[in-house]
Image (tube, rainbow, N blue to C red):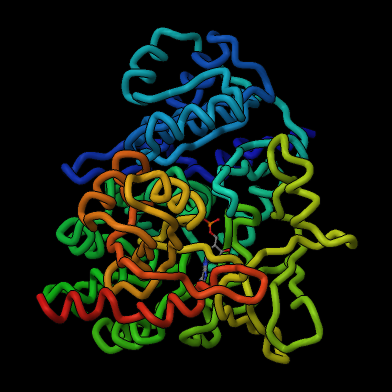
Length: 473
Ligand code: AMP
């Protein structure tokens, strides 16, 4: 029996295919029937281009319904979908091309779909086993090189079904979708829930205060990164009344501050449901739909997910096992081996603890990953760029609390130079969200006996950097 994820997703589409899938901001809609037809055309076009089962299909483009058609078409054709952050620079893209060797690279989905209209649509779904790859999601490594997390049809199917159930999705729901679709959050977590219930999505190209406020009036569920919630709270127009139609607000991809949770409850009268996940495992834990949602906790492991804390201490690195776990890093068996224990558990790299009843709390990241606006920034990658600049002797890149982005990237630099020039140069070489927002100059960096830079100390020292800046505005 084929376990192609496309079959599972399309099985959730409404029987009446004229029902809307994408509710667009101009008041127009694209039906589930049109999505299904688009997927068949995209699959036909990819096949005509020579894409065979197992071949990679990359896409780097702005968010659009056509990009979703290409995604579903790639699945249907048995290809491996490779979404790429639209902020990546050509140099970054070169690396992904070399590493993943995509057979097709789509940069303009509407143009691709226009061409596909003359292709022969692929009606039959290409059979796939549950262990066959459906997607590769690149996540940067601490060495600065990105690793491709391989996700199988079976893993994505298991997670989609568990979430659909856990969050009580039904055909009556309307999902507000303002997330990017090159990351697991918007691509898999959000869209798969909508597809499995056959419900419409209020489809926004990105988070815009006015559009989200308007969208909430016709939506029932919103999925967002913590930044979405701080932005809503910053709007004087956001109130109980705006959220009156909503049944559920979900947050993830970065820690939701308890102060945000509480302010939101006060303003909207609703408790945000926080969940925890990562590219390598999609969603791992979630606060309950019906039980208690506790600020600062990420809830309980999803059914089927096993979670344990490494070591003898109460708090330690979280390790997991389960049906939605990735199949390893693309063409990188050494890295794969490093991130699994000898007895087969995946080492998440997140540090946390667990209550006796299984509830999970995350206290930080073992590595020095920075999450700015919901996106991961790996300090090493930024340091490599800053260190190359004239006058810079050495740099240490850290994340410190930022009222809008959760964390803001800061480069602590030994050397001479202009803050604005370093930021400008970094922005030319890196996606904007990775570039430092502040540069501070120091005479030396704090180090331990082994010569390792003590980033904790730096983070403490500069913890209020963005607060003071805002206060002084
Ligand atoms: P990514 O692979 O880009 O999805 O990033 C995964 C990382 O984001 C995880 O390993 C966590 O460090 C972090 N993360 C995701 N959700 C949460 C959350 N609710 N609370 C704290 N950290 C989170």
